[in-house]
Length: 99
Image (cartoon, rainbow, N blue to C red; front, side, top):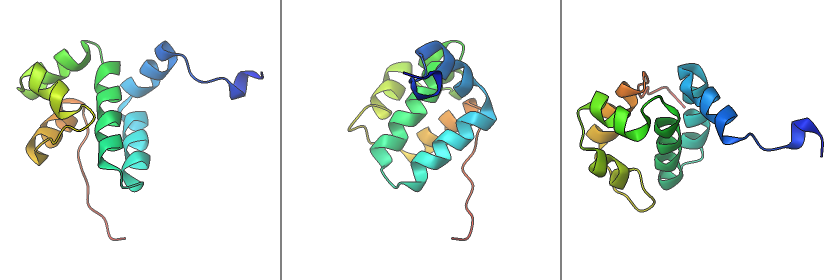
C-alpha cells in the first residue's frame, strides 16, 4: 500500500483539523453533501481534535458538555444556536452565499 493511499492516523487527522482553514474546508465539503447528521458528526470530529476536546469546546462555547455530546451525536437534533456557538468556539462561522 502506498503512503498516499493509507488513511490518516488519528493524530495526523487531529493535527489537520486543529487548523481553522482545514476545519472550515472539511466542514464545508460535508455540508455541501446535505447530510445534516454527517455534518454534526464532522463538527464533533473537529471539536474532538482541539486541545481540550469536546469538553474544552463546550466550555469555550458556554455550553453543557453532555448536551453538546448529545447534540453532535448520531440522531442528535441540535438547535441552530448550539451549532453557531460551537463553530464560534472553534474559530469558525456559518456563511451564506448565492448558489
